[in-house]
Image 1 (cartoon, rainbow, N blue to C red):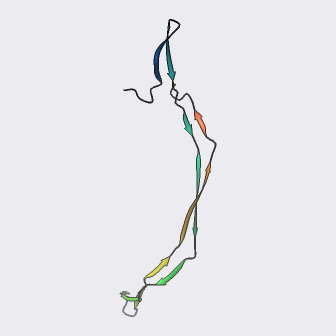
Image 2: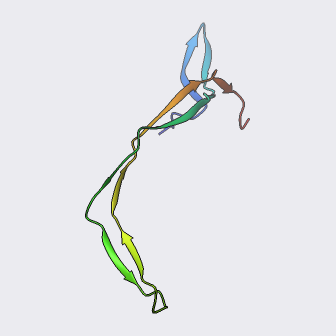
Image 3: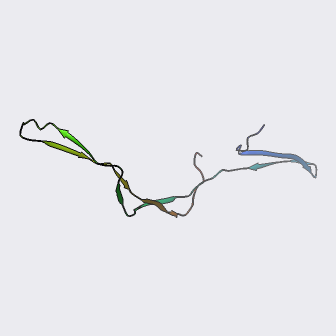
Amino acid sequence: MKSMYEPYSEIAETEKDGKKECKKEIKHFVDINVPIDLTPKAEVGRIEAECCSDPEVVCADGGKPDECHLIIVQKVCVKIPIEYSFRCQVGKSMTECCKGC
């Protein structure tokens, strides 16, 4: 079984005016290159924040008897809308005819 990438294929022998003819068909494969440039874009929308729960107060040891250290912890939900897109520019196609010849 012949591969479709085989460069030569034989066309059946024929006889014309008492002479045999042998015809061949030659294939040549060409690499075609198309450059494509993608330019990314990201846009940040309006950022919003909202409290998600009640704050917690945690006592921290200040190390001194006359000081009191507090830590206030607040969970905050931050919404950051981002829109992703890109610009595509297709260049002129090129061929590489004899690569590997």
